[in-house]
Amino acid sequence: MGAWFQARLRYHVHFVPTSSSWLNLIERWFAEITRKRIRRETFKSVPALEKAIHDYILAYNKEPRPFVWTATASRILGKIRRCKEELERGDYGERLAARGDGARRLRRAGRGLDSGGAR
Image 1 (cartoon, rainbow, N blue to C red):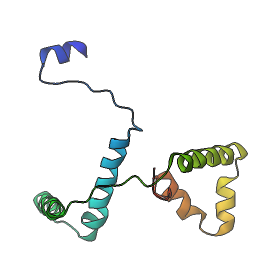
Image 2 (cartoon, rainbow, N blue to C red; image 1 turned 180 degrees about the vertical axis):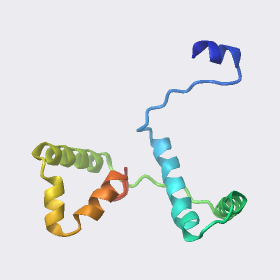
Image 3 (cartoon, helix red, strand yellow; image 1 turned 90 degrees about the vertical axis):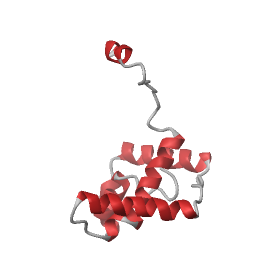
């Protein structure tokens, strides 16, 4: 791999942890464009999809708003602690199923959507 990069000096490797905040924000932006634009329509061609994405970006950039990290460190750490405790008990899925919305919540949690503001 090193030889490949030495032969192509314009490429640079950047090792970034997957939990980096900026990466989470980029994921969040892609989730927004998916929710607000892509899932609202059926596209008959790749060019139609590309045009929809381009149009969304143009509209978004007219009045851009920064993403604001709303979760506090203590909230995130508390969530991790509770998740660890539930995983160690092994009854998370059973308790959700008893509540009646277990399957939906498990699917959302698996996609990182049940986090209440932070992933």
